[in-house]
Length: 220
Image: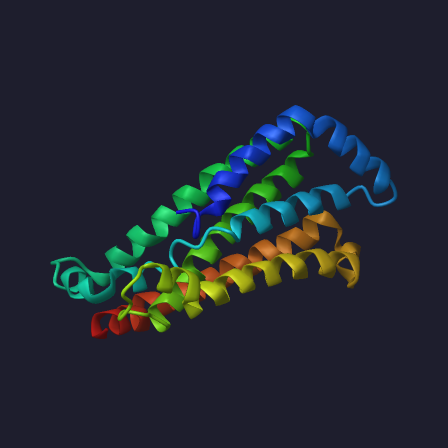
């Protein structure tokens, strides 16, 4: 669990830390970014994105079935329902702690309603994207011949690519706003673009999983 769900443990700790020292922290950040007030909400998105990227339950979920995968395949259940169960677990273990972090942050650092809604939309869409992307790679790059379950978790290509992809996305989110002309869009425009891209990519991956992914899983 710690190997693939570190974010689930860290997010409640961050929520408690925000309630405890959040006012001082946000006051300091407001002073540092006085000329660009929207930088603080953007940093919130970056932190939430980084924490959510530490949850990788779906990436090794197919590989962890190992040689007993045939038992899952022999069940009178559609492969898509199996996929949905795996996705729901990650969404539950990522989405609820993310929501807790946002609620605690809003309690000590009130955001305008539009910014708060976009923050929720971005966090939810990113959690969905990471769950789908991890399962996509897990179906395409399974390791089924392991003798120790640590192998697909720590040495699997699906886990490594999902982890690096998540942190790369987080860096892009930050640098795109600071170094590229993302700041000209404002917080709402910039995060709205990323949330829209998250939803679009999620739809595309979902379509692949429902068609080619199901067929590939059945043939493993």
